[in-house]
Length: 280
Image 1 (cartoon, rainbow, N blue to C red):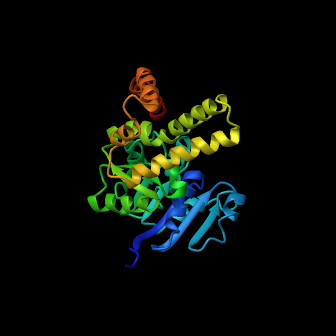
Image 2: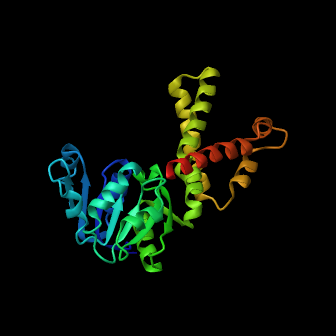
Image 3: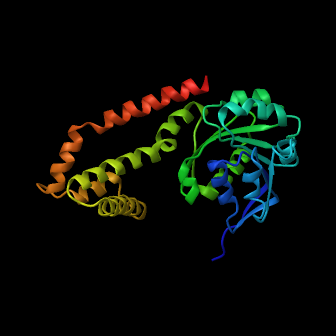
């Protein structure tokens, strides 16, 4: 069976930080064809140089080419804005008159609203706001996307296709995007924190740090693979492990007494409050 070919228009990636590069890695996979190629910009000439031998990519730095961002967006069908949120207004003001009519500007800048983007860009330009997470680096992102007021269904579908090169995509109204960021956006950190704490417990039980890492990392990775491969829900899989009157049942009872749901409620509420602060 032949591999599906993904067709995308010329793409400008403004900002070659970790998320910009993660998305770039998806676009460079076999089966992804970008008509017109990809132009990536960032401030550092050294960072641009690290991409200069990548097939299908032109890398420019504003350090060496002050007009790099304007050059990148010229002729691009999709413009991915992956700079720090505080840099967004100046960047959009810089490129606004160079973005092609009908282009889609995709925000990866946390907390910056669609309204802010649309106010700084011509009416002929569509905006889609996105929230990918760090597993994009290994092609396993969960990305939330929200259409702006000028984006058509076809344009949103094109952005969805772009982010599907690095994982799965969930479409939500913008009013839910900050909440989504507290679940999938911040979620990898919650998983790593659980791994850290269970590893510390394993060490306290007498295992070496290396043994503890092998036990805990392997268990989390294995459980995630089983969840992916199974038709069962997490609840059903937990019950399968939890024999009546057994050791796991005792341990799970202690965890349930800790009211983890309430802890996650408070944690995500705190993250959401911070997202609102940053947006303001």
